[in-house]
Length: 241
Image (tube, rainbow, N blue to C red; front, side, top):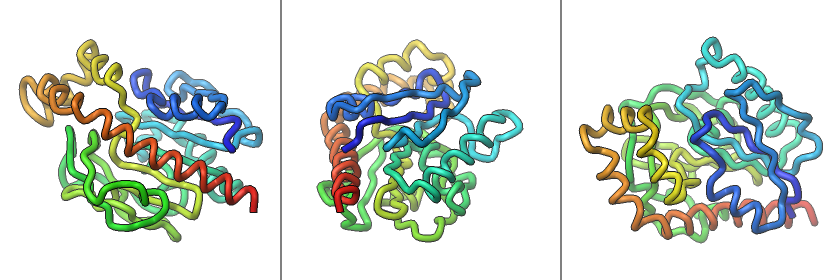
């Protein structure tokens, strides 16, 4: 059972989204640390779940974002010393990989918009998913070397590591499974997000991506909820053993 969760957020417009809803449905409280605003990371001891969101920054940009240093230390403590349930999204996947001894680098090309992700494992984290899923992508970096003990659960044509499991209670996705229709609609009012989309996909990209994404939202929610439930339920069984 998850009773108290902690979230590391890196941008105002990259919130927990669906994962906040899933935690609330389980009766868990959620404390969010806005790292980009200079908020300090609290003691990890009271928490039994860590959620790490995405962001436009890269894991190596410590000079521009000094808080990355403390965040990586906290994730290393969480993963190696505490070994408690972790869910990472995009940057959150990359931070987990690097903190655990892997490497992150620029991908051969940016992956933006709705893309196909193919499962390569029947690990329990993805056991309830179809072999191919369509999810929102928004990244130009990727895990280039896995940490020891990690397993790739899904890949895309661009990025070999789309879902990574580490141990029996930590998982990250390169794609964005937290999105709700309201979050996608919010992009229309964020010039930086529109500029990123158009840089990757050309003029008018937002409307095209939105039109493709909205009908897929129920299926994307099922993917995220299935993975979240597999992680949390497995953690509960592990705790009870």
